[in-house]
Length: 506
Ligand code: C2O
Ligand code: CU
Image (cartoon, rainbow, N blue to C red; front, side, top):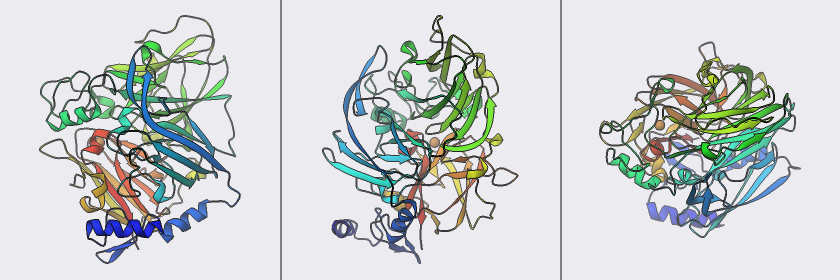
C-alpha cells in the first residue's frame, strides 16, 4: 500500500517513532496518538457516510489569475480564475469529491473550514497530508455531515491572502425555507498584486514594523497609524490594506444585489480576510441573525454584526421598500469599507462612504446567543479541561498559545503544547487572551458550543473572537478522532506561531 511506503519514508526522514505527519499511530509518554487515516478515523467516517449518499464531483484549479477588483486589476492567485472562487453547493449527507490541481509555483492544500470531516482530508500539510506539489493534484473525498455556511481555502503559508477562497454552502434537506432568496456575501482585505506582497508584509512585521505602500506595520510599530477599535477591545489589526472587497469588488464599484420590496433575503456573510474584522449593516433595515458558523441559533434581531476573520453569520432581512440601500462592511478600526447596493427600485446609488446609522446601532453580542435546541449539546460536566492561553512574545513578532510559538506548521506536534483528548470525552477549552489584540480562534474538525455563565447554552461555532483580557470557555464532544489544528485565524498571527494541536490519543 502507498500508505506504508509513505510511512517508511517519513520515519526514515525523521528517525523518530512519532513523526509530525501521523501516518501510523505512534506512542508518546504512555499514550498513543490516533493516526490521521487510522481505524478510528475510518470508523467515524463510516458513521457519517450513508450507503446511498450522492457523490458530488468538483474540480478545482489553484492558479495565477488577473482579477478585476472593480476598476483596478491585480495579478494574483485564485481558484479557477475567480475571486471569490465560484460557490460550491452540496447537501448535508452528500459525499464531496474534489480533484484539486495545483498550478501555483508553490505547494498547496485545501482546508474545508468548519466541516466535521475525516481527519486525513483536512488539508493541513505535515499534519494530515503531504502538501500538493506545484504541478501536482490531490483528490479530497469525504462525507459532509452538517448543513450550513462554510468555506474552503489553502492551509499553506500566506496563500489565503492572495485570493484563494471559496464559499461552500451545505444545504439542509429539511430547510424550513423561511426566505425567498439567498445571497452569499464574502468580505476580504486585499493587497495581492497591488504592490506589497503578503510575504513582504510578514517580513516587515517580523522586522518590527516598516511603512510600505499598502504594506505591513509591526506591533508597537514606530508611530505608524495603528488600527484600533473599542469594539475589538484594542488593536484592530497589524496590516494596512489598500483595498477592501465585498464579493471581490471595491466600494467604488460595488456589486448590485437585485431584490424586490417585501422579499425575505437570507444573507450568508463570510469574512475571508486575513487581518480585518468587519462590522456589517444594511441601511434602512435590521438584521435577524439565524446561524453562527453554519449552525442555527434562536434568532436575534440587531442593527449590526461584527464578523471576525473566518466567522460566518447568516442573517435574514425583509426588503423595506423600493430603493437602493447601502450594505456596508466597515473594516473595523481601519477607516475604510467595502459595500454592496441592495437595489429594489430606482434611485441614486449610495455614496462609496455611505455610513448608515445602523452601523452604530445595536450590535450583536456573542453572550446573547443561544444555540437552537436541535443543535445544543446535552448538559454534561467536562471530562477534560484545557487552558488555551493566547500570548505575544516580549521580543519580536511571535504569537503564542500556552507560551509556545509554532513557526512551522508541519512541526506543530513537536513544538506546541499538545492538547490531548480521548474519543468520547466532553472537552472544555478555556481561552484566555493575555495580549492587547483580539484573536479569532478556530478549531478544526469540530463545532464547539460557547459556555455561558448559565450553562452550555451559547451558540455553536468553529471560530470566535476573543478580545484582549477576555476569557471564554467552549465545550465540544470529542467525536471526530484525529489530529486537529487549533489556531488564530489572523493569517499573520497564525504564520508567526499561533497554533496548537488537539490530539486524539488512546
Ligand atoms: Cu480556515 Cu485552519 O483554517
Ligand atoms: Cu491572533
